[in-house]
Length: 318
Picture 1: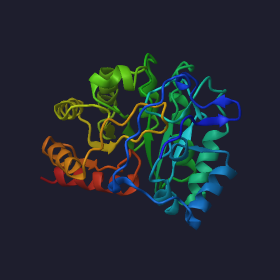
Picture 2: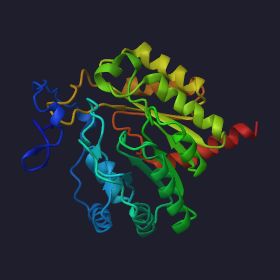
Picture 3: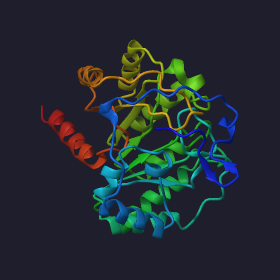
Picture 4: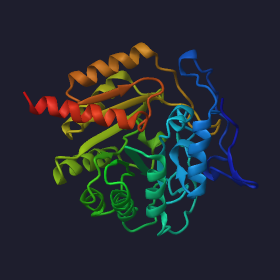
C-alpha cells in the first residue's frame, strides 16, 4: 500500500519537490512480497532504545518492509546526520530539505545504542549531506571510532552516500577502518536521470574502486533495485562494472513505491528471475550475492558478513 503524499509534520510535505507531481498508477503487490505489520515485543524494545537515544534509522525513514523481522531480532540500521536529505531521488522516502547542523554527541549516542542492543554487527548509513565540505565523511569516521571504543568486538558496516565532488571523503572513512564499505548504485545507468538525478553512475563505480585501492582488506558492497524499467542485459552489464571495481558483495531487491508521487513500479520481478540474477552474479565472481524480492542492503547484514569472511577464506586456501 502507498499513500498519496507523506508528511513529515503538519502543514509541511515530506517531499516538497514531489508535491505537485501527478499521482502515478500503483500496481497491486504480488503475494511473494507481502509482509506482516511489526507488532512484536522485540520490535517495541528496539524502537524504545532508538527513541531514548534520539536516533534515526533508515528502517523507519525509508519504510523498509523488513523492519518487523529485523527489529524483533534487535537488528537496526542507524541513519546518522539527521533525517533530512539534500537530494530528492525519485525512489526514496527519506525526507527532503535543508538539514540542520551535525550533532557532535551523535557518535556517542550511536555507540551507546549499539552496546544496549548487544550488536555483533552494525550498519551505519546516512542521508546525503551535500551541504557539508566533506559530505559527512568525517562524521562517519567519528561514529566508527566511537563504536570501536564502546564495543570493540562489534564489526561495522557503512552504507555511504557517493560524496560527489568531495575530495578526500573516501579517505576519511576508509582510514577509520570499517569492516564493510557499502555504496549502492541503486539502478542501471540509463535510469539515473529519472531515478537518481543528483548522482553519477561512473562516479559511484569509481568510489567503490577507490576504496579497494586505499585498503584491499575491506569488503566492498553495492546494491540495486529492479522493477524501475531497467532491461535484463543492463543489470548484467552493471554486474560487470562492479566486478571491474573488485566489489565483493551484490544485493538485488524489488523496488517498492513509497507514495503515489514517487517513481512508479514498472513491474514486479518474479522470484525465479531473482534466482537467475543470483546465479549469474556468482558466475561473474562475486563473493556474496543476495537477490530476492525483499532483499535490502542491510537485511541479514551480520549473517552475510560471516559468510563473506568464510568465502574470502576459502579462496585464500586454494
